[in-house]
Length: 120
Image (cartoon, rainbow, N blue to C red; front, top):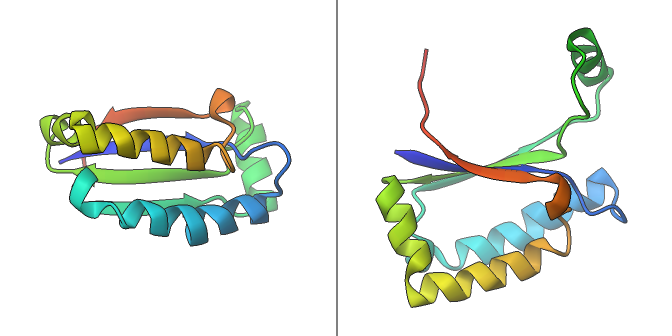
């Protein structure tokens, strides 16, 4: 299995609550409505909580500001991801998803990558 991971910062004119609400209640159903196109096996949203413990963790390690959330999308393989997203339907879906993401994600401050999970 391969994971497509996105570490997300919210659009600057949204509160964290507004960002997470849109992500969970608008974007997730949109993404799920195209399961036959993207062929993802699993989709998880990790919503950052507002907690003094987060500040303490970052400060104790000299780290930068936390992300507002992390998306994890599992695919059977890297090739399965590439095949699904490079098909004509996948290309159209990429445009649809990017357009919707622009409503709540600050792409310039976010990142995405493929990863392989190793349980320890």
